[in-house]
Image 1 (cartoon, one colour):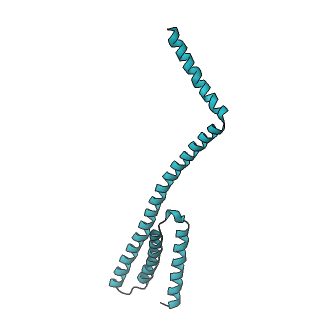
Image 2 (image 1 turned 60 degrees about the horizontal axis):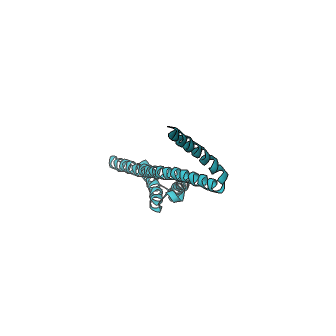
Length: 136
């Protein structure tokens, strides 16, 4: 294999891995997982090149095992990333609900007239129930 082709393949694998990893927000990725996914992509590309240039049965078998192992590493890395994203998604929804509750409470505090109308209904219900108990 020509050294230029090997360099081209290495650069192509590196750029592809970088673009894929860059699409995930960095706050959701630990540096170790990002580096691991990038390296496993390069390993997979190298294993495929080695398998493509295999001459005998032993080389083909070793190349095939290399491709399978590298593919398992890449897929496993992205499965873990998907799980991490799912965990952060649920906490994001929980935080959004808390923000909505806080904004509602702040709006009620800033607008006391709105809060009185809700309380006046409750006080009317309380007075009605107390009037019933007194009449009995």
